[in-house]
Length: 277
Image (tube, rainbow, N blue to C red):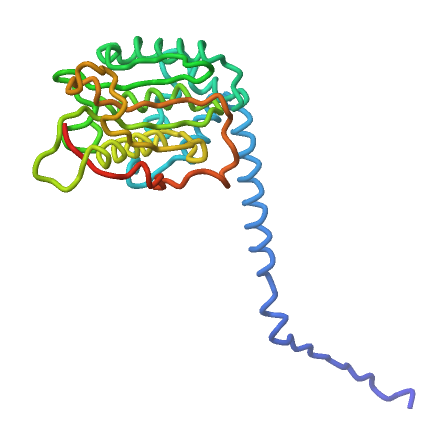
């Protein structure tokens, strides 16, 4: 028994299939997680390093970006108005509270100054006045310089430039906005539409331009067409200056979006006809 030779036992361990499947896959998932985490920290660090004006610019870019209008443009190209020659005053104004405390008179001077500086050739076509605590801005036609083509609700390039400049200067206020359309007394011949439809359509076109340039839809309180019922030059009903868009910044502040007027909502009393100029 003592002389019996020792036996060597070799034990083979077979790995089951599920062990092989889980061998190193967790390492790949963990590496992806760490990479994503590093990218997040890098983004936060970069955002902390840039100036407040550029953060506002970036925010506005993604807030109002349209792939159809701005595809292929950089942030700076698409919204250079926020980094204008005055060192980004437009963006700096956006840093403050949206409940801007600027007085109606101060807002009046701001708008007049912006037009005189950037669109001086059109300053005679813009009337800015304070009515009690409201600010009323009227964009009027003159002979040879139209805001809308005759008989059309399509804004001209001049009108778009003016509306964009106005939007840039009232974005940081919280006033609700009324937009009115007016025509002169010239009747449109040979059509079933009247000056009522035309004036309302032009007011709504101005609304779309303001919203496209950063005005919150919830701030629009009313879009109205008055046809030729409230002439600017009462003793000259056909004077081109009677054709105008009025933008009124109300004393009351904008309410939550829940009670905002829909983009194309109009009072039935505002719709009735269209004549053209």
